[in-house]
Image 1: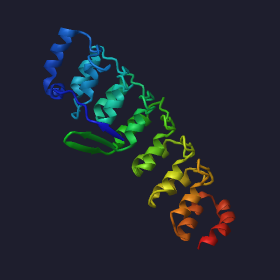
Image 2: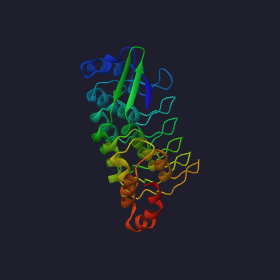
Image 3: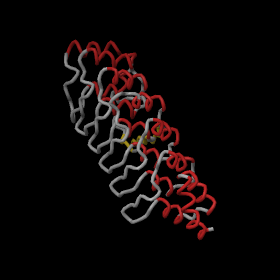
Length: 260
């Protein structure tokens, strides 16, 4: 997931070391929800910086900052905090009533942001930020979380984690009963995606979680078709089928032997 770095030009003023400046601003302006460009407020800018400035964020929340206020791209403070991997800020926002299922203009929830590596690109920088298991856990523990929410491409957080081969994030989703059979807009399931990549434990975990090996994508291919197309060995195919279920394995073993 790529982002163009767009920090406030004086982003350092939002560090906790400048809390007095924020307090003076609140006394002078009074309204932390007043947008000054593209729906962005001082609250959004304070969250969208690299440092985990929990004192500044709490000061703004206590002053009435709206924890669900959206930018012109429908990004909420929680989206921004998750993208910056700010554990304390994420926790504070959730405790203050931030919606864990809010979607941005591309239909992505905070969980979509949390389970995939984020690539920040600027004029002279490229920064890769891996998923943070603590943040993922904070989101998944929320009573209202929809771990199967789909973005505008029909992709769930599980699909994104599988495509990026983020095994740890995928396992966290499996433990929270993420559905492995939800198709995206191309009728691909996470198992289609997993079998199109180099072999890993993800496909086995998908099968153990009930992934359907016979789902058909828009090209008429099942995950098994993709596996065969990519030249996987007979023994690997048999290994995967054993995890599908014992009865199905016995039924399909004869069909697989033609590829031995």
